[in-house]
Amino acid sequence: MSGVPDYADGRTTAETLFLGGEGSAEAYRTAMRIAEEAVVETIVEGDAPYSGRSPERLRARLADLECLPEEGVGFERAVRGVSDLVLADSVNVSHPACVAHLQCPPLVPSLAAEAMLTATNQSLDSWDQSPAASVLEERFVGRLAELFGYGEDADGVFTGGGTASNFLGLLLARNRHLAEEHGRDARRDGLPPEAADLRILCSTAAHFTAEQAAAHLGLGERAVVEVETDDDYRLSPAALDAALSRLDADGREPFALVGTAGTTDFGSVDPLDALADRAEERGLWFHVDAAYGGALALSDRHRDRLAGIERADSVAVDFHKLFYQPISCGLFLLRDGDDYRHVARNAAYLNPEGDDAAGVPNLVSKSTQTTRRFDALKPLVAFRTLGRRRLAALVEYTLDLADEVAARIAADPDLELATEPALNAVVFRYVPSSAAGDGGRADRINESIRDALLAEGDAVLARTEVGGRTHLKFTLLNPRTTVEDAEGILRRVTALGRDLDAAEVGR
Ligand SMILES: *Cc1c(COP(=O)(O)O)cnc(C)c1O
Image 1 (tube, rainbow, N blue to C red):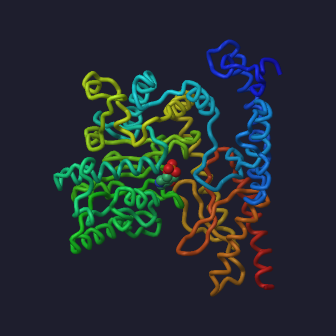
Image 2: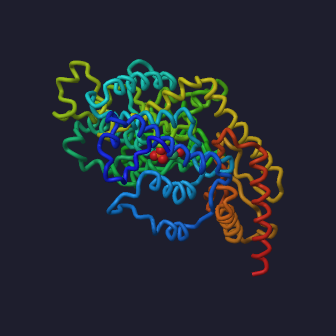
Image 3: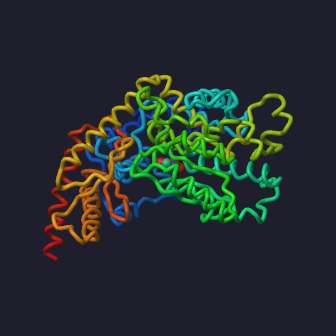
């Protein structure tokens, strides 16, 4: 191929290894073309969601791939190795039957933006490492704050995802509470002895990162009080009131309430307005984990399901889920940007205090990261390319699809639907013919169905537990997945279930 510098060749120099050098434009184009071809061959032309290889077989296959050879093998061979051994054995998230997790097919415009942002290699931790990128992120965050109903005082930052955003929300909650109620600067002085009584409330269906954050914040996982949900897996305000009364009686000190807009298994959205009322009455920091369901804000049809989110002190949204962005791409929003003072810090080499007064963007103070990718560019390019309505239509299609798939499951006597889908996750299970009295057998069969599908490489389905029982889960993020695709997977689930059932009976 013309213009291909064989980087293993001892004669290649920094000129073609780095952008800007002589011949580097050609080298860059050629390298990108070779990488693009590998993507086209394995992902675009790949006809299965997974190769079916087990961890053992992957280890055996990858054993011969020398990760740090003494002498290079050249670019084409390096890419070929990755293509054959890594891309070919990746789950193909763009395949219509890859329907397991909140792992989205990325939008093509965003993939192109990803290439641009890595080429510029801006770092958002200081303005002089990312001049326009910093200003753009500030502007974009402002627009996104507006999308979620926040006002002018709002602020925020792009993050690596929901885990980081939830942590930041609870970190601010803890620090503000300790500052206002205990006169303690937790940043400087750490936790006071009374911190042992601090409590965070969330529902039993909330994401595990609430507990993880509590552990990291020095409060311990026991600081998280899980409140019962209703039958649709939404936090029950009555149960919340009861939990708050119990905490009062025990002399505990609740300081934060986490509402979930889109639980990971069921997509259920907590009654955010009712939760905001309780948070206001009790002076709790109200954080909404909208990592999954945040995309509802795009939709004229579904936006009202997020009503109350604009009253939250902070919000977590993942663009690398239902907004179809390449990983990683998350957002943290803060209703009152002044609250950032509880975590702010200045470093002489990045953002000396004088710069703040001069109006220089200071994003490192708003993040738990230092060096940080310009991930904002991906949704920016996608949003500008498509506009809100087209993006909303993609999301709306998948919500409608989930309803149809759920209806098919409900109508099938071999299958049982766990609950009506709230977003696009559909949880169900195969019901063995003679399951009566032996839940363990049904669990084994459902587990084996999921394993068999993965090993066949026909469908990548998730498994989860509902009420202690193993279930299967579709997460229908892909706008290219059709009802027929889902029906095909369901037929395979039922056929496998019957075979496994018969084998179990014969045991
Ligand atoms: C995915 C998810 C998270 C974790 O977010 P990451 O982006 O994986 O860090 C947190 N909460 C909910 C509800 C999620 O769906």
